Amino acid sequence: MKENIDFLTKLYSQLYHQSGYNVEIGLTGSKVCGLASAIVAARWKIAQAWYVKPDRFSVERFTSGVGPSHFYKISVQDEPGVVAPRTNI
Image 1 (cartoon, rainbow, N blue to C red):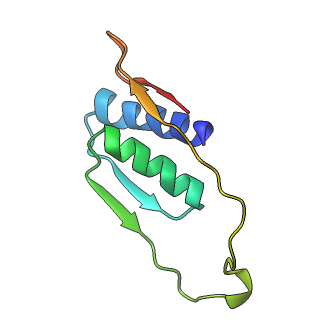
Image 2: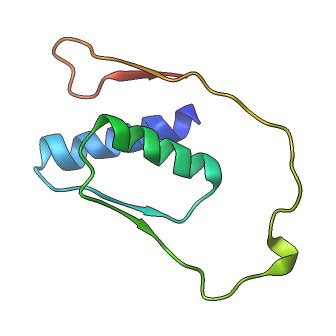
């Protein structure tokens, strides 16, 4: 999770703060990647979040049942003079 957030934070800083671009996110990865994207979107302005619908649905690859649950405590700490604040997980 932390690696995903760190990657998105760095990319967001490069695109939005340094280059002035609007940032859009395409949700195509795992549930953890989706959660990392939601955390970044809760903290910074995301122009659009896209969910890409698959061309076909594979019953064999679909998750069934309930596996172990993972709980995360997430906090954001602004640091003076830093464009991208540190996210603690």
